[in-house]
Image (cartoon, one colour):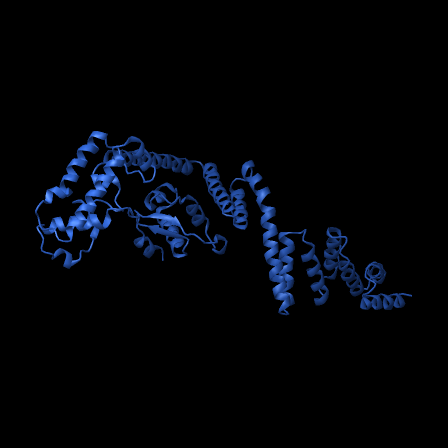
Length: 414
């Protein structure tokens, strides 16, 4: 898959994280999690690959897998949705398809001028004031005035005096009115300032060039910095270990920010194996791991309930034991595990331990007394069983079955 995906990826494209994805549902590798954490929705894939510090082939393969899983999409670069004044560098008239009947109308206009009028009339409300007057957004008032006289002259109704315009007459008048309205706004300082706040800023050619040069310098600086870091890592094993720890730490923080506590705990465990003395990592682990344990325990407890409802006691018991391992302070899981150990006649002394822990955690829950009494009976520890059953019956006088069990046990013990 790796080589095929690598050839399909557009390195100039911009990776973006798909919305609505629950990352805990995906089994992400450490490399995939690290690369996903660096996607910001604006950096091209090529630059992300160069700055990742990972082997180029492995990094590209990991990006391919993230795309295959639907977690990432590659945006080839969204086109500006605003309608632009047609130029030689763009598709003529924005690719507009003209009505052949309108173009065939016999009027005193050549076909190119017809197209221009039809285009401007159709898009007059979409074009900005600056596009209509063919000036940049930073144009000086004198330049705007000069542009207005130049553009308006072409569409001034007097320019077509005594010409046969047919249906184009109303279109020309509407265009001229729109151009005049644009000039009225741009020639007034206050109106222009208010208008500029309603449209996106369009950088000049010089600004675009400067930004491109700055991006190149920044990219070169980042590459040099990364090369130095890689050289240091190759020379220093300790630095290499700490770098790996930092990568997994960043993954953990990203998972926590996304609300994925379980994967955050998994990543921080890996980070600790690389840098076990790092106080920042240890503090993060101490905060996250208990929460992750509770979440894992909750999932295993629900799995145990499901298995138990289908009569699969062995599977249910294993799920409850995993729940206890993840969160030893869950009285429900302790009690269910003890009950199944009794039912399966397995490790009854462990069942006693579970019941006693459950009692300590929830002293007011008397059903733990009944289960503990029954476990003691199975172990032949009748005195202990009588003690626990007596406490239970005193608190639950309406439980006839338990009362009868208690009486029978007392008779046998005489």
